[in-house]
Structure formats: C-alpha cells, structure tokens
Length: 556
Image (cartoon, rainbow, N blue to C red; front, top):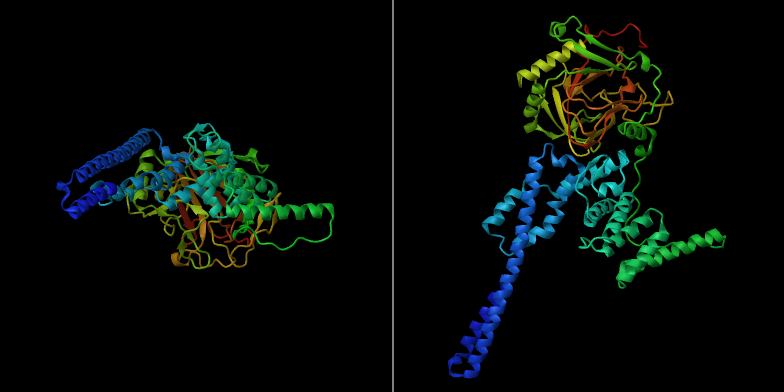
C-alpha cells in the first residue's frame, strides 16, 4: 500500500513539475511507462494482500477447528499438559510471529480492535512460563521421557506431538532461568527434530548456540566444543561462538595437562558470558523429596508391618444423621490414625459446591508461620475459594455431616476451602498444624527419627487471627477423579491416597496433649492429566474440650 501511494505521489509531482507534458511525445511515452509501473505496483500489492488474506484464512480455519474439537470433546483437551503448553505457546510466541504482523498495516480497523479485545481472555507470557514450569515438574516427578513427551505420549495417552520449535522454546525458557539441566534435554530433542523436519520451524544454529553452552554448564566441555565447531561451520563469523571455542579449548588443554601430571596449574580465564550455574535446591535433593516423588509415582517406599490390622467398617457414632446411612470407614494407617470415608458427598452436592466456588477461585495461599498472614507460595500451585456455612444449604449440610462423622465441633473450624489443581498443580510436603517453639522438627528414616530439616521454630502466630487454637484435625474431600497423578502422600510413613470422587480422608494433627503429630506431614502430588477438585475442612482446638478432651498423660 505504501509503495502504491508513493508511486502516485511521484507521478503527480512529475506532472506538475513538467507542466507541459502534453506538448511532448517523448514525455507522453514516459507517462505510459509510469502507468505500466503503477499497474505492476498495484498487482504486487494485490498479490501481497492475497497472501496475507490466505494466511489469515488458514489461521481462522485452524482456530475454528481447534476450538470446536476441544469444546466438543468429552474431557477438556487442555487437561493434557502437552496440549496445554502448545495452547499457551500458540497465543504468545506463535501469535506474535504469525498473526500480529498481519494486522500491523491497519491497527485501527474494527476487526483488529475486536481481536485485541478478545485476546484479553487468552493466555499471556506468564501463563506460558507457568505451563513450562508445570510440564518440567511433571517430567521430573513422574520420570517422563523427553522423547515420548515430544511425541505427545504420557503413559497410555496420546496428544499432539511437538515440533522442533516447540521443544526449542521450552529449552529457551529454562535457559533464561539458568536451568541448564532441562535446557540440555529439550535442546537435544529440538536438534534431533530439526534434522528431519521438511519445513524447519527453528534454525539449527540457534539450537546449537543454546545447547553448546548448556552442555558446558553441565560439565560436558568436549561435546560443547564439538557443537560450537559445527555452529562455526554454519556461521563462521559468529563472534560469541569464536570466543567460546577458544575458552573450551583452553579448558580441555588444562584438563589434559592435569591428567598427564604436567606442572603448572590452570590459569584464570573469563567465562564465555555472564551466566553462572544456578545453585540447586538442597531440599529437593533430600530423602524426603525423593520419597515424596516416589509415592506420587505409586511406588512402595515403606514396609508397613501392621497392614493386616487395617479394617473397613460402617459407623454411626449414635448420631441421628448417620443412623439411616452410616459412614463407610476404611483404615489406611493406625499410628497416626488415617482413615478414608467413602461416598460422603453426592454428585449433586459436588456440582453445587463447584458452582459456588468457581467465581471466587483465586491463587491458593498459605499461612506465613511468622506473621500468621495468608500469602501465595511457589510450593503450592492451585486456586482456592472459601465457602461459609450460610452460603448455601449444601454447605451447611456438609459441615453437619463432617461433625457427625468425626465427632468434633465445627464451631471454631475454618470455612470450607475449595481447591482446584490444574496443570501440574501440587502442594509440596507440609504440616497442617503450627509447630510450637519447644518442639523439634524430625524426619523419619528407616523407622528412626532423625533431625534433617530446619523449619521455623516460632509458629505461635500462625492462627492467631482466628483465635481458635491450633489445627487439631484435617478433613479432605475429593470432589473429582483424576486421570493421572494428584495423589495425597505422607512421606514419613509411606501412605499414598489417590483421588476418588466423593471420598474423604481424615486424620488428627495433634496428640491429646497438644503436641503436633509429625508423621502427618503430607503433600499433594502434581496433577499429571486432568484436573483435581478437593475441599478442606481444618478443625481447631477450641470447642473440642468435651469432644476430644486432653489426656492426663503428659507424654501422650
């Protein structure tokens, strides 16, 4: 369009400048040539517009097909973490590269304004980063193979496969976070895919650039040098690669001298750029976290000697609410006592609770042990909402049922918390109760308690604002089945509970003397496929004086 306007202006200026064009045949012939060039310019413009419109048509058809398929599927297409990542990338990186340029020529058009308005509902770059973080968390926790993930395979489920560009962007995001371990894995896959792609989605030199440096950071200097040499074969004047090659060669020479026992130590040299190795989280390398991940995968981590004493029973506790429909109680562990109650919520109640909670869902928070305030934390990834007893008759009935089954008062209990765990949603190992200043923090290893972690010792303020004492017990209801992952696990004792819609887990957090039961440390495993709905009822000490009286035994 700009070219067309420019030619018209040039022609008009020439006509008025000559002022006597009509009196010269030579000038009239020049005008014909200009007319021909104008026709070519218009044809070029039409051709470019046709290409732009054809691309927009293809994008529109793709979006329509994708959304129609997702909305028509029995289960949410985005419940699969691979599909979710590709969807996030589609409306961030791919949008900026493939769609946005088509509207730059006329940003004030009505269609552009309408699309910009609708784009407010679509994923943003923060969502993309979160999706990658979740995907990597799932990969680590469930030991998922990078090749299979790139093929769209998670266990027996199959989704869309990834291109070299899709793998490259994962590696690029982890590189920016200095997570060179994951960068290496995904850049290796991108390099393998780009070699077989007919229509390359990313340049090989870009992959080599990131991969070589990540390998160096991982300690594989020889391969870093090999890939850097390949990069320089493709781009001989790549300055950073030239500097890196010299640095890698010097490092290898120093290593060889040391192996030969030659005199002279390594000389100080500058690293090829400013990146440094990110310190690893020591806790995530510890035994507890490894046990947590093993339990999430369904592995057996403890040999429970009293398994033969676990029983199932019907209980009514002489409560009128339970006389006609007793609770179905199943022992899971005896000390601490952990039980599961089956079929405690109906489908109608579950759907009502979800409907009430959905508009109120916000990023889940945790109690800060020092201040007692609620705040978000990276180790808890979910959205939650709080429902009061008088919000609906269903909530009132559920609270009464919990009181009847547990035999505890709900007078000082916290409101019903509804939590929705989506892509990679988790809650790492934690205690529900506030630890006292005179208690130590322990970790169970081979049946013995050993002090391994440093926690905040001062947590007396954790529930100060509630004025109801410590959390004496936890009631956790599963409001959905989960396709894969999402278990509740107890790393100290090796217990794992996989979500079952309508069932609820119950355990005491405190002994009768008020001390915390440390074996109740538990975690919510990442949701691998699907989504997980749960409701929590945290029951407090106050008003339980006659329901669960203190023991005369100080050591209990």
